[in-house]
Length: 377
Ligand code: PLP
Image 1 (tube, rainbow, N blue to C red):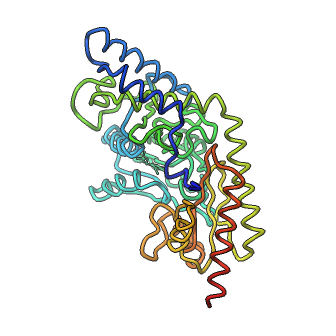
Image 2 (cartoon, helix red, strand yellow):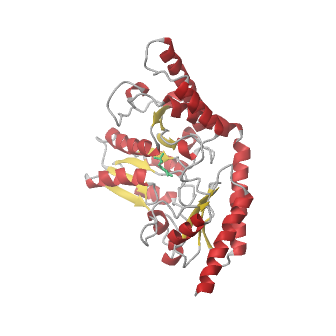
Image 3 (cartoon, rainbow, N blue to C red):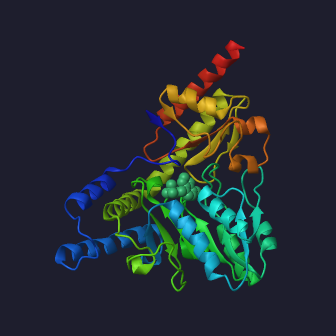
């Protein structure tokens, strides 16, 4: 199998798998238990939190573990508007957020919140001036992702923080950094955000673990109610195996960060060059600012058909997170590019394991599919 859909999920790295196994079979204590086996689990939990915090670039006490990126995004959106409930009911976000932000924002819109949706240009970039113009004294939340999951574009989160500060708006700033984490350099403090979401399975940890960064000093309520875990902010017995694995995946990535970034972007650039050379009718919809994601299109070839035909050849790529029933995904559609181009858009995303040979195999398969179609006409 040739797996080039690493923005969807990644293979768990050996370090993470070993850490999870040890946490499940040896160090399986409940961190809340009062005897030594539990206390040891609690101590390990704090060490793992410190490792993940180092990768995020924040203090350990600013990180709360969640079950996934979706939970972190939902929590951030709901808690931020609750935090600002006496200040206003206006939210700003972008039209290209992941459903994990779009849907809770839509739910708030249905409850009477006013939402300003910032639209991208044809390349998938958001103009920070649009955000500055949309800010109001009653804006309580700005949620802007750091890296778009379908186009690989980087959004102007730091500029958003500056605009909020300059305007005097009380808005809290949340960024969904699920696709940015470990792939592009940032710290929450440099970005100037109050809340930031990550997810483990995009960085070679297992599915079922994520974290929300909450800026020190910001008091937010929990999403779930229950026991006192995570300082009462995220009740539920801590998933110690997933947390151990996330910490191990972060340590492994940090140990090779420059090498991984170089390798991933080299393979992506090589793919884009080979694609352009072999398929002159092809369009690069987005070369991606982030090292691991790009989007290409074969106009006239529906992406769902391409994904199926590539799958028959053992190659996994994505048609975007929601390219359904002849309609382009909301992200591709928001760029306003021609429909024929959008319907043939594929997202190709790389990991440190990806090789130029895999990129070659994808380009050859696309060229073969295109020429078979031409000769069938
Ligand atoms: N946000 C972005 C940008 C994503 O790409 C994803 C997953 O595809 C999520 C949020 C949701 O993360 P999870 O799958 O951990 O719930």
